[in-house]
Length: 257
Image (cartoon, rainbow, N blue to C red; front, side, top):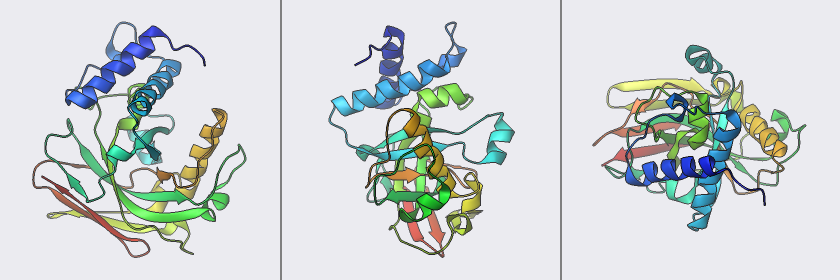
């Protein structure tokens, strides 16, 4: 097993403590040593190793920055991804107050793999035939003391993965880019389509599989993929309730205590 640089281990421990203690830390990119892409991915991997060492169960992946307009607006060049873990899955759709630092929620399309998916040449059409789809709410919660992070910080932080809610998964003949969903909270309502995620949620999953292939990995059956936010996020706090519904895929909800 390759050795991990001491500064990468130290950074992963710092972010792990920030998550567990619910206290954001200064951006790595703003510190004198800065942050490289190699180290950002290394920190994310080391944090996942820490979770695995605590016997946490890996449940899938979440993609970030899959919306091209959002990337352009924020000066981000490409998507990234982070791991999902069982403790992040809110099976009852309830987020307890004080669990996170400064969370926001965004509506997404989720994919559930029915078989092993891998390889550098996998396509969106391959993905569309290889699994089921659901609506989802992703809760992102940067472990930084600010939301003014960049791609490197976000990558080191596992793409801000914090919690998620899933609706029921479905096989469907509808093309994934045509999925339509509405997120509502109080008097706020936002709509989006699957096309906002890299042109299709299936392309977003294919992108992830190709990225995993470069690391010698595959997407295992039973793993969930959150394919990226389809609208602007909503801030979360006590007594906030969110609903996401789709005529093709059903619905899910989040209630904040």
